[in-house]
Image (tube, rainbow, N blue to C red):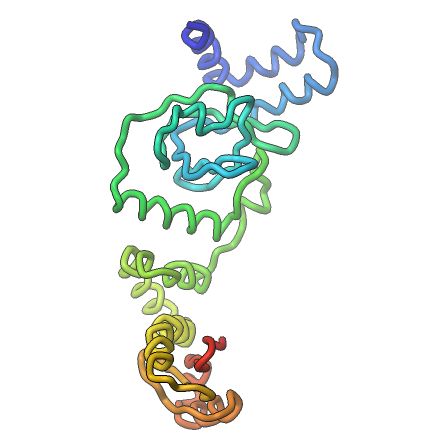
Length: 257
């Protein structure tokens, strides 16, 4: 009943943020200077639909189309507020700045949506993408430095190549990146070499091979030697000058960058 009573007033404030300025100017509740400053900061609210991606000890992670936010609970833990709903959960919410942290305004309106494996995978990739570019947003308003954070083609390629799921999801993006940016070819080959080296390492271990280093180029073993230096030298001699940075060195114990 209380939520139904105050929700219209709450919605009106967010529709007309100038009301916040009026409240601060007139100060009808006779708030002190610190509390007035907090109220003034509420103009930097973030309102919309979010996915509550996960809950941690100190905060929950809210994700929208562009960013991921670390959101503190007001009183009750957010998973308790959600009544034990399985994450992720889609909600309508308003995020507010509070002493260099982010809170929500106490109202969460959830959608009764079931998230299958495909949607969960897409959301995971979105979370990884926005946090790779902007980090986890922990305060509002978002600083200009974060908004203007550069995320170049090499950064995107490394993110898209990170997991099997991301490689499948961003297959065409990966192909387009490499085609439009020929300078990424060595990095692309290097990343694929790391992927293929994991399977190769497993097979070498099963075969009982120890004490050797292997140069892997994409999905091909170029050469091997007892030392890393000797393996690198042999692989560099085998490859053309422009491709010498594309291989990786795999030891029988670990993958060496």
